[in-house]
Amino acid sequence: MKVIELAKEAERLNVPFEFVSETYEKALKEGKIYGLLVPKKEEIIQYKPDEIYNLIDRLRSNSITPKELESELKLENAYVILVLDFLLKENRIRGVLTHKGTFLTNPILKQQTLEAIQKNGKVEVTEISTQLSVSESEVSRVVEEISSQVLTTIAPYKQIKIKDLGAEVGISEGTLLPLLKRIISERRVSAQLDMINDALVIDEHRVVADRSQAIERDRNSVDRSSVRDTTESHASYSSPPNKPTSAWYLVAFLFGIIGGLVGYVAVKDDDPDMAGNLLGLGILTTIIGAIAAWLIL
Image (cartoon, rainbow, N blue to C red; front, side, top):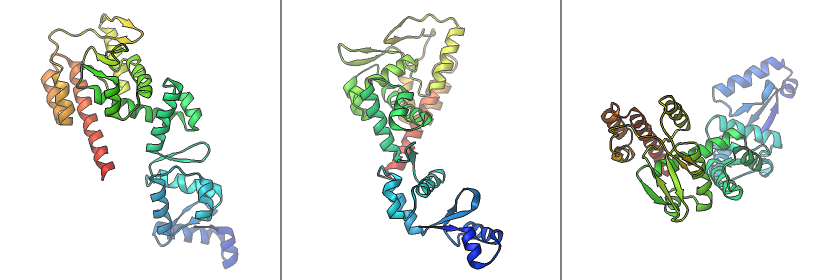
């Protein structure tokens, strides 16, 4: 890779700067050269396709600092960061740049987030953000992805051993417990932690994969003056009369969006909340299946 200073190029060719700038911009748009404009359009980072392809391959599996790439790309640190940021915005790599300039792939960011949760013994987004030098929004995104995975996994169960749940989602028990406490406190599932038997006991099959849905459901429950008993590790909700069987959740979980739609139509008159949850679970299961298939391919 190399940096072309447009002002020097104009001086070398003895032509106006505007002419050089427009010529290079046109060549970039038409694919005659490969590169990206540096802010203020006074420089261009030019590269060969093979250089970018090799860099993308490395970034898909490794945590790399710009310092490590300086000699390889023959660029200064600031330009390396610009290249990484460009690839992120173009969705050619998936991950995040830390405040220190290190590129983390999504799997590595997830792994480091889980390690921070286990070390802290709690899920505190601001604290994890500081520890990893990553924005709070990125940490929140990862925590939400992990929480949704846990909620989808527990949906078919009335009770599950914590170690078995951890094995299914690939999370250690020390990390899983703080996540479960957060999920329960957010009222995304009506359940309690049975620490004597090392199990999660689900009181009602009202698993809400989306946090905003949980908040809205809680508001609606307050409006209807539902009776709730709450303890530090238990969140329960009143069940409507003639509540449909919870087996519908298994249908939505196994058959994705189609199962969710069938369940929605079947129970929407008797339990609108459950109907919405079935549809949401079906959509989420379908999306997760598609993502898993994409990653495998």
